[in-house]
Length: 252
Image 1: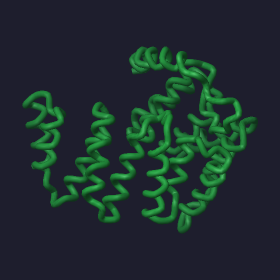
Image 2 (image 1 turned 60 degrees about the horizontal axis):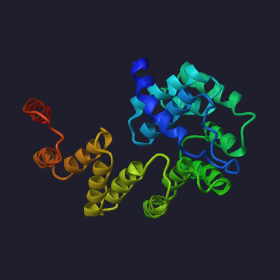
Image 3 (image 1 turned 90 degrees about the vertical axis):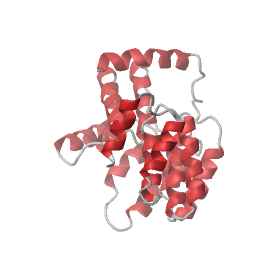
Image 4 (image 1 turned 120 degrees about the vertical axis):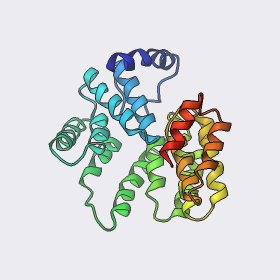
């Protein structure tokens, strides 16, 4: 599996070499690595993480540490993706150790581990994301969580729309469309939600999560699975009859 991932990263590294590096004056979370393979794995891991493709993200972040063991950010995400226990604690401890000489934004990011759970956790997390957003307003990952931890659905929608309107999205905009779809659906804007899910599929047709999101939309709309099947057929999701029949059997 690791060999396949490394081969798949070669093109990404080649593209990255032709792009200008972020300005040194910026105060982003210090995710990146001087090792090209580790760096590419981190960026691929982040892409799949924000698109709720967590198993793939886990594989990339785990692999990044094989090439650069100093990546505190990889340990943070791995801790988030790991069940409670010794392994999660190991990732938390490593992140705390490795972030000591990093910038303030990175230290605040790791300090999310210390936020008490329970009632009011969203507000407590939003306080930290607000501080990070204040330090580096151009950080896309920071802005995304700053939006998602806003107090009300309406505020989250408004801030996500601000983020969506920005240029130069390192991680793309699919995850933002996905969130806008779900939150709009939750507040009753169903047609708007569907339009966001439609756009998400068009933007990321090779991903699994866009179809999962659209599937949930149709499932919640009176369990109309046959409307979903028709939608997927129209968009070329089923390349052969066996795949279609198998999908139908899962919902019968």
